[in-house]
Length: 446
Figure (tube, rainbow, N blue to C red):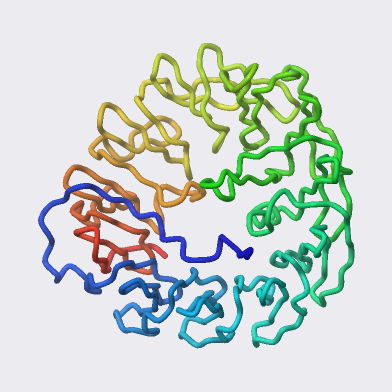
C-alpha cells in the first residue's frame, strides 16, 4: 500500500558522543529526563515518547496528551497527523483534540485547509471539520498548491484538480516516482512528467503544458529518499539543466533554453548538482565526475585558477581548495579568504565554521574570527537552515560532551550532554546518558 513518507516525526537531528562527563544533578532539568524521545517545543507543546508511544506535554512538563499514539507527526499549521495501535490515522490539534477521527488508512497534513486521506487504496480530501469534500477516487494525490493538486488515475496517468475536486486536466503522462517523493518539487509550482517513450517535460500545477516531453533527464540532486536512492526533478531559482543524447542545456520555468553547454557534450559523467545565486555547481568526466566547477547561467565556466571548488555559491562565496587547504572565493573567481583551513563549511547568514587541526572556529565573510578555535565538534541541525545559530544558539562539542553557545561565544548550555536537540521557546531537549530525555531552560531568541 502506498503511503506518504514525509509526514511522520522527523526525530529531530540530535548530536551525540560516545562518552560524557558524570551526570548533572536533576535540578538542572526544567522538565525531568524521563522520556525515550523529546522533540522541540512548537506553540507551547512538545512531542514526547514513553515505551514507544507518543504524546504531548506543555512547557511546565504537564501531560496534554497521554502517550497513546504509535506515530505522531510534527505540527504544521497547528495540526499533527497521528496513528493509533490499530494502524488507523487521524489529526489532532495542539490541545490534543482529535479534529479528524482516527479512521483512515493514512492522513496527510493540512495544506490550504485540505488534507489528503487514504481509504483502502484510494485517496480523497477532507476539510478541517473532518468532512470528506473530495471523494476518495484517486490512486495517488498531492497536497494543494495555489488551489491545485496533482492526482494519479487507475491507469497511472497524471491529472490536475482544483479544490472542488474537478479534474481540470487529464494527461497520459507519468510521474518520476510516487507523489510522496515529489512534494518538494511541487513547491516550485511545476511537475516533471514522462511519456510512454520515457521522454521528459514539465507542466504547471494548473495543468498547463510548458515543456513538451523531449529530454532524457534533468537535475536530480534532491534525493527524496536517500535509502532507496529515489530522486526527483525540480527547479532552483527558476533554472535547471536538462539533457538529450548527452547534450545539455539550461532551461527556465517557461521552457525556454537560456544557455547551451557544448563543453560537456558526450560526457557520461556530467552532473549539475544545484543552482545557487545565478550559478550552477557541476561535476564532469568521461564516465563519472572527476572534475568540479561552477558555471554561470550563461553557461560559461568560472575560472578559479589553481583552486578546486566544492559546492555551489552561497552568500556570494564558494569553497575552494589547494594542497588540502580550504578557503573561499567570490563568484568572479577572486580568492577572498585564503586557503588555510583543514576543513570549512559554507557560509550561513554571514558566518562559517572553519577547522585548524582538531579545533573549530566561526569566521565572518572577511575572514575575521568571531568565535575562537576551541571546539572539536561544530554542528547544524538542518542543512537547509539559513543560520548557524538556531533561535540565537549554536551547537558545539568537545571531549566532555555537547552544549550550546550564543552569538557572543558564551556557553549557555554546559558541554556535558551526550545528546542535544534544537532549542526553541526557551527550552532544549537533552540527554545525559543517550537513553532518557528531558528539557533544560536556555535563553532562545524566538
